[in-house]
Length: 161
Image 1 (cartoon, rainbow, N blue to C red):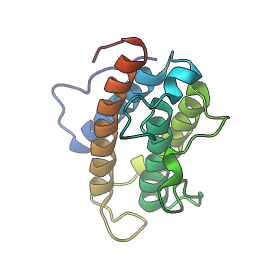
Image 2: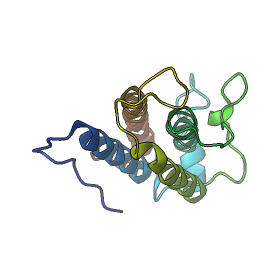
Image 3: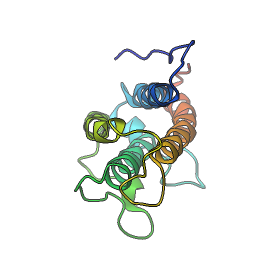
């Protein structure tokens, strides 16, 4: 997978926002790709037993599904985090690096429906602009990419951008 920085001389804020989200998405995938299931499911921080590389990626799938696809574009898809506490961090035996990377990429494809809308348009939920939703998902993805940096280093010593 190729991960490239957004255009340095960007002139279109909407395009730039999507480019940064794409960069962050691919960063998250690269942090999980190549880990074994055991490494990716490990919770190395005792005070955060659900903080695993797989849990972070599964949560990002739920974030994209809800914010970009349901609240943003109005797609008729089931939410992946119904319930309290938030179940998007809970792993099943079927959750592997490969299965969750595939699920994450499927949400990217679903989110293309939002990408077609003007950033100043009101999102499908009627409460926010497309611009706000995109900024929210970018900050959420960036935050969790930072968690993945640490989890990957703890799993196998790999560091990098």
